[in-house]
Image (cartoon, rainbow, N blue to C red; front, side, top):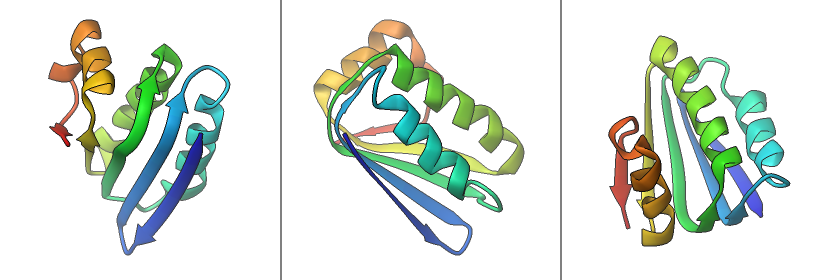
Length: 100
C-alpha cells in the first residue's frame, strides 16, 4: 500500500492506494499521527484503495475521535468494494463518505 499526506494550511488530505490490511494499517496510522496536529479538516482520499480490512477501520475510527475535537473528517472517492466494508460493518452511518 502507498500512503501520501498533503497538508494545505489546516486541511490534511491522506490518500491511500492498494490494499489496507493488518500489515499496511500502521503505515496509514503513522502518516496520520505525523500530520494531524493543528488540522481542522481531514480528508481521506480512497480513490485508489482496492481493499480495506478491519485494521483500516480501526485507524479511521481513531482518526474520527481526534477530529470530533479538532474539526471535520470526510472519506472521498470510495470504490464499491471498500464501500461494502463500510456498509456491512455499519460504519457507513458513522463516517461522512462520498463514493467515487
